Image (cartoon, rainbow, N blue to C red; front, side):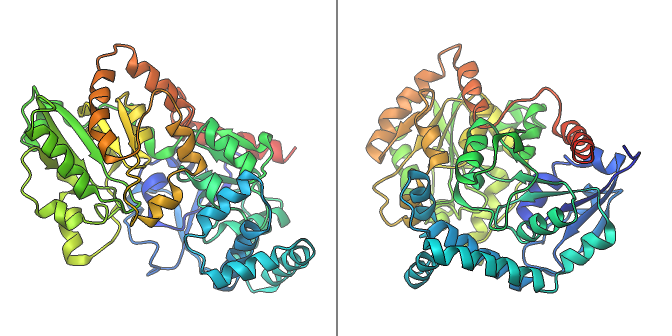
Length: 459
């Protein structure tokens, strides 16, 4: 093998910068090989976060995105989803995509998905994508990479062209999933990567079932953004309680907001009233909004309300405050702050968010809260029973609450779970199904994988 490989890492969104660049999981790759970080052009709306200080030693390349091809692949992916098939996996996918598909487009895509028509439509799409002038194609030919990596989404800016062009040039392509629902809610339109790095057994299964990727091309690799959870929190429980004006002897319930538009303000009111009535003793509540959840559908109310037992988590206070000034927007909190919160609270409730898995990794009793009476929360009503959520809800170590009435009753069960001396071990083992556990750090494993992948591909 060469002493140094030429590697291109394609990053197309702030979320990927937060999860893969800020976490420094490519640090050893950059130190040991010649690495280019390829991003959309300067000023592109998807890239706003600082990244240069985290990739010292790598070269940064700004690459124009071919919008014609992006539209072609997106349309083909929609047609693939809307093909008239009636197995459970196909129905799950269609249910998700109908959230963002107008009815006229749904009819068109269903028509294009008819067996005979679909074959010719797919071939036409690939032909048009091939004849378009493609900056990515020119880059790969010029740089002659030994291997390329794309952490992101199956319908990201670069991935579909990368699949086609890397195969043509015989360059190994490693795709790394970014978030929990990636394998089961979106499809690669142009083909398959050489390797698919899943979080754990669940998403490995989903990559095989929904993406039709052979099992030998899927690795259970863990989640890059959760690597920091192996470290010691940067502040103590005593300091955490001081910052939030909570007595050190109090138990802390974390309500971690979701991104599906449920009424988190009313949920917090319900919990606070129950504490006021004396239903829960010696307990305080911390509210932490989802970083792009907008505080549910009434985030500004949460910020302005005069709470007695609820504290807004300090690192997300400014985000909640800014909702009234800016309206809905995304923020990108540091995972070290999330680690502090999850380390020092005693119980966790969330209306569907990845933070439920993160809480389990920390060994916390957790409740998956499904406010089914929030009928105005259309996104929630559509996705709450999708496959990645469904598997989690069915686990016996996860407390499931399906409405506000159950919420209060099951907080008592949440408290009881914490008294089980073996519960921390049980919930952590549960979460290994969703995010696999490894003794070696992510940066070491990705370095070893790249070296092995290059050798295997070039035998």
